[in-house]
Amino acid sequence: MAQIVQLAAEPRTPRRKAGAKATRNAGRIPAVIYGRGREPAPLSVGAFEFGRLLEKITPASTIVELTVSGTTVKTLIRELQRHPLKPGITHVDFYEIHADEKIRLEVPVHLIGIPDGVRNQGGTLDQVLRTIEIEVLPADIPERVELDTTALVIGKSLHVSDLVIPNAEFLTDATLTICTVVPPRVEEVAAVVAVAEGVVAEGAEAAVATEVAEPELIRKRKLEEEEAEE
Image (tube, rainbow, N blue to C red):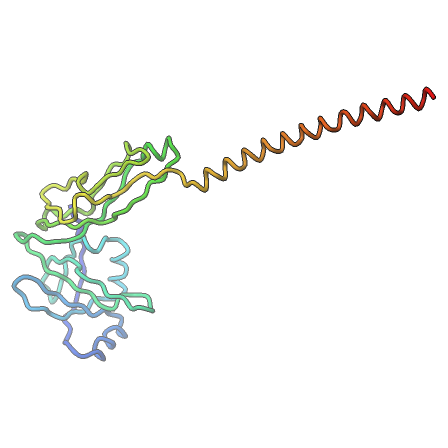
């Protein structure tokens, strides 16, 4: 079930760029609401309130109950515009939804469990696809879709076809890879081998040095004994 949150908005008189700037200077974000059977209407929402809201939701799959002039409608956030250089939102598009109207939206894919290939084989879990697109009635919108990766071993993958969302039609290609377990990097293995070989080489050098040193000591002792006899 999709997460549902509430937000207050105010009607906004459509103006040119200067009007939008004045709205932002007043601590509000210019917005618009549109949907089936209604003309687009300009709005504004509080910048602080909307910023706090975004910290708690997944915008694309969260139903926002938008209250404007005492009337509340269910909406989805269709677009967020951000300033290319400054932090914060510069514009928001809300789409009004209806109980009998299927809508297209993206939902996040959440991986659960520790793959066998990570736990027992030293591999790494790589998530390739983080969202998928579906078509669904508002009542059936999932907050997210979960995918169990526990049985995944090195070299194996899970795909969109492995996902299950009741009453939803998948629009993303079913053959696309969601995640895979990749083997340890070659560089890491090579480094371990190099260290091991270095230890062996050091041991061999030490053994050779000992073998060379022992005959020298024997010859030295023999010379000393011969000089003493003379």
